[in-house]
Image (cartoon, rainbow, N blue to C red):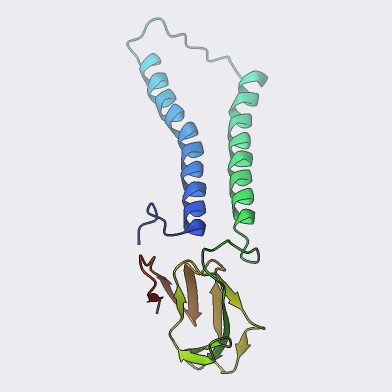
Length: 185
């Protein structure tokens, strides 16, 4: 799985947030590095044109620039992350190309039971969803075992995360080029 090769709308939106954040940070880092080298070159010992001012103590304009640029950068990065994260709200539906697949998730000790009420079947540790279909969870998550477990599924049916105790298993449902079903676990 490559973060720069997204397989679905959620992953593509996460890639956009990542690239935007890196671009904003580089817009600050690159000029800062250039300024460090420029100051080191200008104030070298052999430069007679550079003025040495040991009595200089404070400049409000310099303080304003020095503190406003990082503050504005943090505000901009926070805004990009905040807006991008709220656009990827798991509770909001993501449009799919196929009909929704209804699944009820039941946690058992060290395994998962996936019940498909519309199809009248159930599977253990195997969530199967057609490519392009949206996932629709039926009812509440039912924990029946004594082991802490957490299950989350993005509604677009492209990625899910199953967390059992301290281990996190991540898998993606493949993007099929036919009408075959794709297994994720």
